[in-house]
Image 1: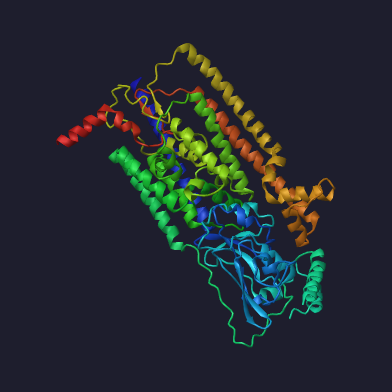
Image 2: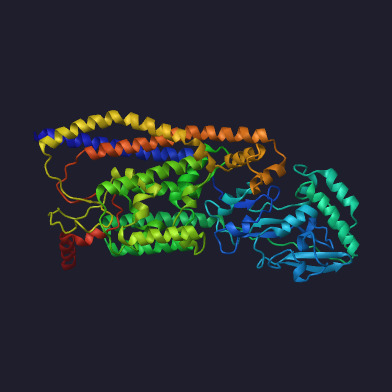
Length: 211
Length: 429
């Protein structure tokens, strides 16, 4: 009787130890298999400006009170237009910096005279809330030099970005942390044919003398 | 002057009516004569990678310390202190990301998505607590997990939950685990992160509904110890199983149990098991028959819940943005929906083929069919396993911490007179 019990315990221990070893080996194998497909680099969230439709969700869906997404200006692409549709929208009352003529709800775009007839547009990031109104205006009527980007001094890098979950165009991507921005550049735009119809752009730039 | 504006506006509307496109040169950048220099704005870099390794090191140190405190020092006060530290470090300082619970999804995604490589730190966050649990029991839950810590601090008036209810409610955690892996593997969503009830507290801002949900969990947590850990946490149920076979385990008493019953009500998580009486012969025979029936029932349960998972694919696949978009576009194309949504107009703006979108959505839905079989089958297996476990009877002669359910919080240590005797002895010496 006693020896039977003892054997029973031994068998149970044996099974338990076997299972334990199998689990440990399984975890080791999982670690090995995963590390073959893992990257040393962490990823961060970023908006692909070529896909972004400036819907305005960035302003409201971020877990931060003030969104981590801000408007960024690619100065090299900017036309320095006197009438900027990113700044004043399609139907300004007048062409000046008065509040009623500004598209930006927080007045985050600063318009300064450079030389006749060019004006510089700078973004005050502390005021920008990432609503993308100016981006839409600039993309629709202008060069598209204004675009939205996740600012990594603010972004918490949530495992699932709330804005990404709400993004209607799927513009949010995980990018490597050492290249955390997807900036618009002049060459990328000139060579970019996807989604852009050159004929239309030519017609527009021929039709209007901006100066 | 004003006429010029009108011309521009008119042309602009012409352009607008023919659709929008982003980024091409309508107005060539000017050649400045005044010597104007274009500003080059700086782009702030993200948190350096090295800090991710610091987090991993803190996790490793936390796990080691927690295991030491639970198994060696046996000091509730020290465990509580570590708990508070973890809450502030992983919770309020690191804002709760990345955590091992959420890392389940990154791992699942990296297994099924060819393009996604899981960062090493995330992998370590997933694996380290598992390894530690295999050795020392759930010491991660005890004092390292920030979600556990925030709940542990509000346990004030714990009531005991009947065992059947506890087991029943815990099924939710298994379903949640299966759903989280399904949605992550199909690249649809990270639901664990999306519905993390405490993340809003850690961020000190966030979605109002989640804030309410978190407040509810904390309020319930005053009376029912750690409700998220016990009934919801998908990582907790993995740790439960590993903790069953851990090398070392939490012992209520450092010496021999004298069955004084003092510790009986000390556990707010209902993880202390009383010694068992002998099994009455009549009951034994009945249980034997029931066990045989349940073992036959097992494949039936696995298959039927797998089928439910499969049949639910029209619902579950809608979590994926592409399927939702294809649904919407279909409604618009067939005239069942008048207005376009942001997503559908963004899709139309890209000029992609609608049939391609449909095909892609069907492909994803097929994936959800297979995933549904697996996820449902898993839930069925767990359910059957639970029913079988109920029909088994373990012989216990002492008051013991349930290996699976024990969160290693160390509350029961103080209740054991043997513990006090030992401490006094140590002090006297």
